[in-house]
Length: 519
Length: 97
Figure 1 (cartoon, each protein chain N blue to C red):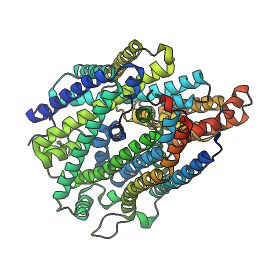
Figure 2: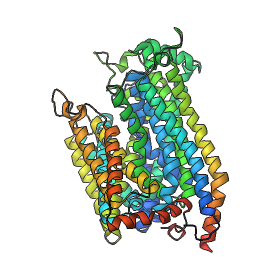
Figure 3: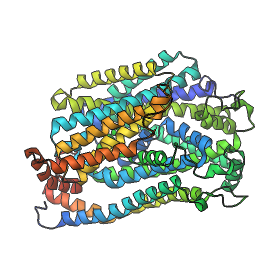
Figure 4: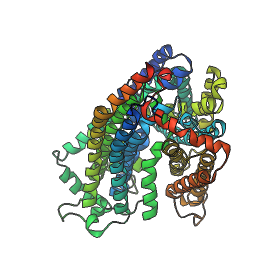
């Protein structure tokens, strides 16, 4: 049985990989024939709710989830579970508080919702900047992961691997638009679900489908022993853990590539239905990955092929899902799982890239500048930026970037979106100050915290003790927005407040969007 | 706001407020409570059930909570279909006539 040193170069692994590439390029070409114009590029022209639900799930279930969640269980036991819970809750909150109102108010991006009643140019610039920060950093993390996967899988030099993937992204996004990406993400969500369900069944089969037996063995073999089922303070202390948990849950409400998906369906009802599909799938996914993680704890020890001479997991803890696939499903399943991981990275990057494109071409350039040429140039520009950053940060620990993107999402986009939809007192000035403070404090506190100040810059002690400062930065943003709005006596503020009842009516009923439904 | 004077939009707002309040309140409240319990765990909730059963009440509670969200999603969808969608459709049909 092969180890994960070169999973994709194995004939079956390579076959799965090439099959996925062929399938996605074919879907992109078919989508290109059906997509014409700006609306189709951003919103796919009203796709069915179930397809959108699958695509949303595909957008959200990243390789970090499939590889990272079981790795966290493997390393930290229970503490990984409230992160899984956070993402499940995030979906519920998205479904309940955001999905249908967002659809009723926006057209292409969540920035449309912010500028529905607030002063357009300033708010649009702020929203676009926050979107670009999130999108570029996330794309870079994904690109580094994909580059390393191709490098180790096929023996392709890293720069070439990263360049090829960036080129593939340009084709997917600029040719297939949102429709092509939706199909790719839906296919990926189905593949990922199949992979995870099969792996869970394979794990449970080892214990005659007795979960208690699995947990008992995991408890014996985990370095933390019985404490692997207890809370131990994963993120350096309770406040950090609380902040990380809240950021995991609420950051979803500020992820531009996820929010954008709610504009691809015809109406608010379809937006809700697609959120129900996505939430169901993601909750299921969270539970299954817990079993996969404890399965790795219970089954991998004793198999020397998966450990190096220092008794560390070969390739790092993130590889436990793939090692488990090799152990329980042999080379065929390992090849399938590796191809699914690649598919996951590619699909997530494509979703991020179209969100970034919308931020530049739609939010910043406006309807006059949002031409096909502008969109294509933006796609190419974003791909080049991500490519260069992926080369520069190749050997860096990128954990801080994930923390930073989550912090920005939960401190800028999420509070502004909730406030603008639910609080009539929010003014343009309040939104700008709140969002600005959220963005600045996120960048500052993550930089001064242990993940950058100590781990990246090499200082002995962090200036800010919190590695995950979302709890602080989100509160900064919310209180600033509220305070500035309360004291804002400008003429514009009066107009902002006066426009709220009409916005509320439309967000509740959708009256008025019928003429825009087909975009 | 409701120019038709039928009161449908007010009714819609109330129904949405009740359904989203219950669902969102449960999700946000239970999650926050669990986070607090996980970050400052009382001894009993963090201790294995027995020598033979390493799982803790906190672990079981978390898994059950995740599973309960399945039910909540289903209940929310059913409530919206029954109480909100018809009203929303009526308002939209009225506005387009």
